[in-house]
Structure formats: C-alpha cells, structure tokens
Amino acid sequence: MDLTKPPGIFDRDVEWAELARFAADGRPGATLGVVSGRRRQGKTLLLYELARATGGFYFGATEATQVDSLRRLGEALGRHTGAPGPVHLADWGSAVDALLALGRDRPVTVVVDEFPYLARASRDLPSVIQHALTPGRAERTTSRTRLLLCGSALSFMGGLLAGSAPLRGRAGLELPVAPLDYRSAAAFWGFDDPLLAARVFAIVGGTPAYRREYVQDDTPDGRDDFDDWVVRAVLNPARPLFREARYLLAEDPDLRDTALYHSVLSAVAEGNGTRGGIAGFIGRKSTDLHHPLTVLEDAGLLVRELDPLRSGRSRYRIAEPLITFYQAVMRPAWTALEQRRGADVWRRSQPRYASAVLGPAFEEIVRQWALRFADQETLGGPVAEVSAAVLTDPASRSSHELDLVALGESPLGDGPRPLLAIGEVKWGRLLGRPDLDRLQRARELLVARSGLDARGARLLLASAEGFTAELRQLAVHRPDVVLVDPDRLYSGA
Image (cartoon, rainbow, N blue to C red; front, top):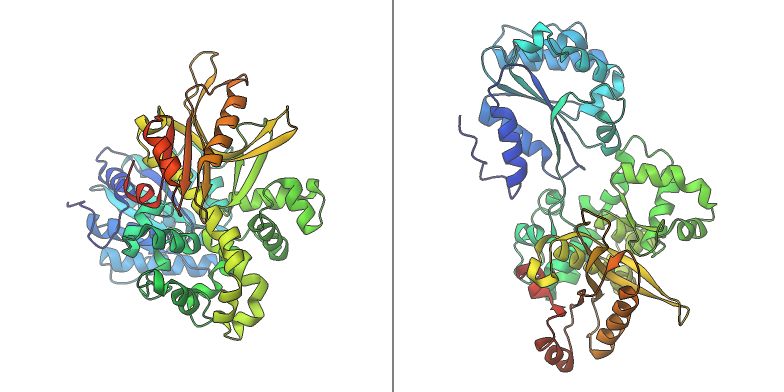
C-alpha cells in the first residue's frame, strides 16, 4: 500500500503524514479520527486521495433527511463492496456497524465527509458512534476500520470532542486543516515577488480554492497587473470570489443573526479590536457582545489575543483576510460593485485598503515570521508567543502601541518570563532612527517592569518600504537591532 502523498496535493505534508499514520495502523480494534477546518482548505481532496490510496471508502454527506442520507450511504456501500444492490440500512446504528464491518480483514479507511450535515438531521448520531466504539464491543474489537469524520462547521466540529460530548475520549486523531501560511501561499500562487505576494495574501489569505476554482487560476502578472486583477477577479460580480465573504457567514449554522455578526466584523475591520470599541461602533452594550463574539470565535472567523503587557486585556482580529477586505472595501460600496463599477470603487478605496487591510495584514505576516520562521539566534531564543500590545508610560501618562511583542517560553520556576523582542511594523513608510529610539524607550520601560526579563530584548523594525541609510548603518554595529524587509520575510530567517 503506497501512502506517498499524491502529486496533486500542494504542501500539506504534515497533514498527509498524520492521516497516513492513522490509516496504516494495523492494530486490532476500530479507531476514530476527526478532521476539521474551514471550507476550501483542501480537506476533501486530502481525504478522498487517502481513501483511494488505501482502497478505502469515501462518503460525502449532503443536506438531507435521515432516511435520504441512509439510502445514499447504502447505495454507496453497495457499489463499494460489489453487492448486487444497495445495502439496506434501517437506522444509524446498523449503518455505523456496516462501516465497522468493512475493516474485518484489514485496516480500511472510511471517510464520512461533511459529517455535520448528518448530525444536524440526526442529533443522536454522535451518541450512536460512541456506542458503536464502546471498548469490548465485538463489532469494534473485530474491526480495523479507521473511521474519519470531517466537517467545515468549526463550531460544531470543535464541540464534537469537547467537555461532556459523547465522542470525548474516543478519537485517536484530531487534525485541523488550516489555511496555508503566507510563505506557502506565495509558492502556491507562483509568486517570487514578496511585495506582490503580501498584497495578494492581504486579500485572499492562504485558502487554496481562492486561486483554483474561485478565479480559475487567474493570477496577477506582476505588480503592474495587481490593480487590474483585483477589479477583474475580486470585485467582479461574475466571479465566485465576489460573494464568498458573505457565504462564509451564511454557511455556519450557529451564525443566525447575520446582520449583527457583520456589524461586529465591520467594527473589527475598522480597527476597533477591544470589546468596548466594538460595542461603541455598533451601538450595543459591551455585556451584550459575549454571545456573538464567542460564536464568531468558535466559527474560526475571529481570534481573541491577550495583551501580554496588560493583564485581563485582549483584542480581537479577523482570522480570514477576505472578510477583512470585504468589510473594509466591498461592503461600503456594495451597490456600486453590483453595478459593475469595480474600477471606480477600487480607485477610491486605496486609502482604506492600505490602512484597514494591507497594513494590519503586513503586521500579522511579520508576527508569523517571528513565531515560525525566524532563527533562535535572530531573536535570542525560541519564541513561544507573538502578539501586538499596548505599553503604558506612567511618567508621561502616555501609551505606546507595539506592533510586535515576542515572548519566550515560561520558566519552570518563579522567574520572570523572557521578553525576546519588541517591534515596529510599517507597510508604507521608511523606518529610521526615530523609530529605533521609540523602541529603545519602550524597552527601558519594560526592563523596569516585574514579571518580564526584557534586558536582552531585540528591537525589531519591519518595513515594506525599507530603512534609512542611518538606521541600516546602526544595525550593522547593534546585534540587538533586527531589520526585516520583505525579502527576509519570505526567504530569510
């Protein structure tokens, strides 16, 4: 059995290796795995190819009644086993046992894709699977079925194995399939220009389908073609990408009050990342936002990040770049866009795109570089956590917004946690000596704080425009100064 990753799957080496290990497990007893991730990340391709490579069984669920779903599953089982006709499945108990029976003679991969569709029509289905996988039950012990449940409704899939859920403790694999990181996305789109790659990533992120199905492999032919590409591929009502941000909210069953959720996301896209800022923007009380914020977090659309310098404070950011772009650029001009005035909208939206989309996206790219790609020598140790933060200066009664705060691993004892780096990140401005001086002042304040060891903190400056000659010369003789340009972000450490 050849479990080499098929050439048609880009990247996903880690995910394929985990799935292959799970599928090839030869031990007796049926096992369960759960695969989750937002739509269009390539989950179906991964699982379909895994089933094909292992001679397994793949079933893609649809929105249907329980009777209809059981009939479809029985027909698929009949074709797979070579039976003279459909397999009759009276209920989900007999259906799950039929899937376990596929693995009586050897390890067999069984994929049930879009599992939330089935569970929505049959609420007791997770409990049925729990019972089928009861330790010591003959149907389980005599089977080597490797059952994989997959779904895109993150709020549902996240709760499948949590707390007191029926399948808690039953799964031997819990695999999230995340969007491609910014470097992998650049390679997937075929970009060798980091500035072009960053501009495109700020709009479509790392979702593979947004290059293939959604724009039919239409990619910008260099920086000079970028604006035209946005108009013809993103702001064009005839392209699927045009309405995708709206569909992302409509697809999750827990997102019922879409007007409220759009307002919350719009607030965050406008730079209102705190709960109070969001409440003020949409005209609600802060206490009224607990539910919508939690739902958007569970759906994987919002990320809540704690401020490491202010205990109990946090900020929200939108996890999907396309939603940020939609809220900042498309939603305010939706009528004009539907009238095919995309070129005019894009021309007058340049300031909003730069401030609300490109700038924040570039900051997040730099934070991901520090967390995932920078050498330990660059930042003075292994980075455990990176975020933005606000530093208060008691002497001047002012505050400093730090675009990057990189923390090391927590010490085993009661010692202070190492602060490895603080940073200033700008997309459209040359950075110079005044920016370094500001970071040095921030480091002095942090050295005086308890709970953190900031004495060796690096001063990181990142810019898409570059750095003044004076700053470059200073950095040559200052090992504590780290300059990060686009080339370093995309190919250096």
